[in-house]
Image (cartoon, rainbow, N blue to C red):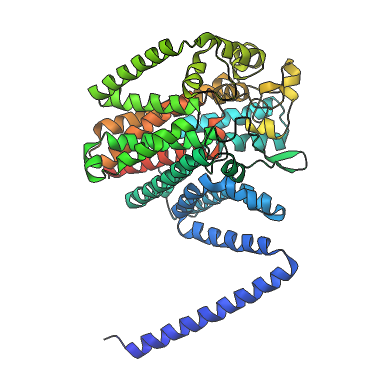
Length: 507
C-alpha cells in the first residue's frame, strides 16, 4: 500500500531542491549579466536548453528548426551585433549538434545504425569531394567551408533515418508547418495591399560581415516596392520555394481520397497558397509547382480533370497572347511588369540573349561545360572553388581568374545561379553522377512507396516527395537551391520522414 505521507514528503523535498536550483540559476544569470550583455546571457541560456533537449529528444530539435527557419531572416534583423554570429549560425550548429548526438548514440552502442539504400552513393560522393580537395590542393579552410555548404542539409536525411521519429510526431509537425504556411500566405497577401511600408519592415537589407567573410548578404530590393511578396522569408523566390514545396505535399494529400475526406480543410491551403505563390512573381517556383502538381495529377493519378484543366490553361495562354499582341521573343524584365509579361518572359529570346551577354545564368549554362568542366572533367576544382555560396561568401576568385571567367553572375556575385552546374564544376563528372545516383534513387524509392504502400498518409507523402524532387530538380537549374536553408532543409527532412515511415511497414 502506498504511504501518502512519504509521497508528499518526497514531493516537498524535490520542490525545495527545484526552488533552490532556480534561485541559484537566477543568481548566476544576474552575475553573468554584470560582465556580459543581456543578449549574450539570453543566448547562452537558450543554447544550453537546446543542447539538453537535443540529447533527450533530438527529433524535437529538428522540429524546432523546421518551425524557426521561415522566420529567421526577419528575426535576425533585430539581433544585436555581439550575438549575431551565434544567431546567424545557431540553426546550423543545431544540425551538427544532432549529428553529434546521433554519432555518440551509435558509438556508445545505445542504438545500432541500420543501413539505407542511399548510404553508398552518399559515401562515394563525399569521397569524391575529399579527393577533389586533395588533388586540387584546396586550402583547408576553403575545403571545410565548401564541404559544409554542400553537405550540411544532405546529412539531415541520415539523421532522421537514425533517430526514427514516430508517425505521430511527423504528422503533428506537418500540421504545424501547414499552419506556418497559412500565416505566410496571409502575410504575403497583406503585403500585396500594404506595399512598401510592410516591405521595408520585412526586408533584411543590412549586410553583416566578419572580417572579409560575408555572414549575411543584405537583400537589395531590385524589384518595385509592393510588387513581389516575400513575407518573412526575405526574398520573393524563397517564399515561392517554401510555398510550392508544401503545396506539393498538400497535393499528395489532396489526391489521396482517405486524406481529403478526413481533412477537407486541405483545399484552403490551395485557396490561400496558389494566389500568394502567383504574387511572389517567382517563375522558377511557378514552374516547380506546375511540374510537380502535373506529375501527381497526370502521371500518378491519371486524373482527367487535371488534363482538362491543363488544356484550358494552355488555350487561355494562347488567347491571352493573341489578344494582348505581346511579342514573346522581345520581352525583357522591366519595372511594372504584368503577370502575363512575367510568365511569357521565361520564353523570350531577348531575355536569354540579355542574360548571356549580361553574364547571367544563361552565360553559365554555356560556359560551365565548355570551360570549367573541360578544364577539370573528373574531380572538378574542389569544394568552395566555383559557383556556389562558399565561393561567393569567401570571395574566392581563384578558379575564375585561372580560367579567365567573370566572378559569377554579373561578374561580381561569385555564384552562378545553377546548383547542378556549380556541383559539376566543384565535384566533376564523378561527383555529379554520384549525387544524381542518390537523388534519382530516392525519387524512384518514393515512387514505389506511392504505388504500393497501404497507409494513406505515407502514400500521400510519397506522392508529394516525388513531385517535390521533380520541382527541385528544375529549380536547381535556376538557383543555388540545395544550399538555401528555407528550401533544402525541408527537402531532406521530409525525405528522411518518408524513409522512416516506409520502414515501419516492413517491421
